[in-house]
Image (cartoon, rainbow, N blue to C red; front, top):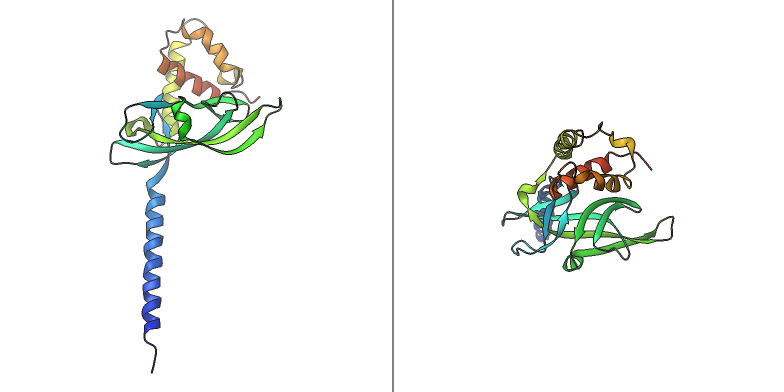
Length: 204
């Protein structure tokens, strides 16, 4: 007597694999790279109104839309030991991706460690949280265009406009501190211009 169960089993297994594959494709499609438009509050969950930090303009995040109007986001960066609440783009490169509160450290996972040229220890970290959906855009050039317009308008009133490559990324924040008052920049504007200048700065 022929065993008729095997073809059915193969079909069922094939359908199961197809379903799993489809789920994987949907999950992958639901996650995308977005960029913060401005200084954006980061929250610990989709409902709580207490911020656990801020994401800086232009920071890339992996996001997945939620039904609450907040986006689930994940970002990677580096934090120097002893200054764990500040997340930078790279070891020794002090372009800030995000700043966390002490409560926000619970949403940070250490992936790896490294040392810089001065012997300082840095942690490669991944931060997860939630942010308002409207605060992110798919094209980072939208952020940098707005930043360039603001920089050109506010920072050319007193002197000739510096090129972004006049200074390194680590030099720009100190230089801007002397200009913030004269240019009447609020914290949002200062963060936007700082990130723009650092991201397009001269290589160290």
